[in-house]
Amino acid sequence: MTEISVPGTTAPLDEATGVFVDHRELLFGVVYNMLGSIADTEDVLQETWLSWTARGGGAPLAGVDSPRAYLVRVAVNHALRRRAAVSRRRETYVGPWLPEPLVADEAADTADGPVLRSESVSLAMLVVLESLTPLERAVFVLGEVFGYPHAEIAEVIDRSPAAVRQLAHRAREHVHARRPRYEAHPRVRREATERFVRAALGGDIAELMEVLAPDVTAWTDAGGKRRPTALRPVHGRDKVARLITQGRGGPGDPVWRYRRVNGDDAAVLFDGDAPYAVLVLDLTPDGDRVRGIYVVANPDKLAHVPQGTA
Image 1: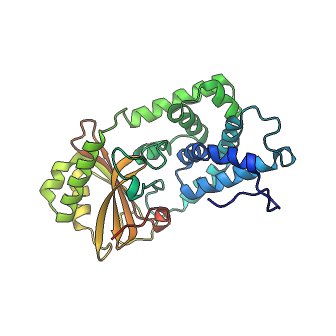
Image 2: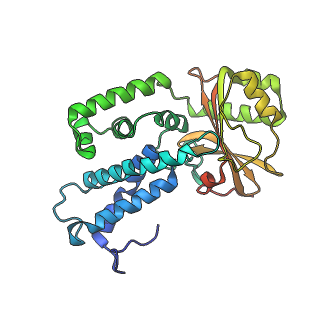
Image 3: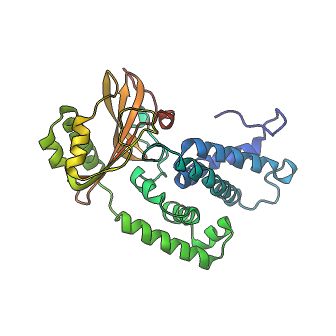
């Protein structure tokens, strides 16, 4: 992180900077779960910092009883405004759109070790959240992910507690209808991912048919920058198996490494040391089959993925 100074000066805002840095991870988690984009999240945090340092004539802490509440409110409202720009970009996006993955580096990539941005929700959940309105998503993230009570959320988004309760109810109903409350054990997810990668690399149709659920769907987000890729989601076990085994292209010297992506066990395909694609699987409630395959291969969305190692 670069040194933060008062806008227009070279003098650091020691106390105000410390307060902002102390809350940066929280702000990142809230905004990222609202936008699904690391680049947009970083822009919103910069806007939040500028708003923070501009208040009080350069004395941000003056008159602020709860810096945490103030910073969250500012960040959420900047994120809500940013959401319109994100939606406009989606209208001209080539092929399926998936959130930008948060990939842990190798040092943190153990079941018992720290997980990068542990407050982020799964990639599959972020896809579901895309179908909410911006306000519903903000309320869901603050309430369901970060545990904010309705009264505090009402202050953040400048709505009445009754309105927040309505938004929360609609968001929960929508999310739970599309994604039942189930999280596979990390060991089960890791084993399923390894089994899938082995079957895919070996072109083993029979093994893939065992791994895939009948109603599996595969999304490949390459943004029109990788060829060949599916320009629409592919539904059904037979079609997905053919897509995987008949696919062409990709790195000349492919290397798969297992990483944690948005807190879940997943896999990253490298071309040498450079990340080429991120693979995340969504499992059925019993953990035996794959019901969703998310492949992020757009190079722009892999810029923050840690490099591979020899």
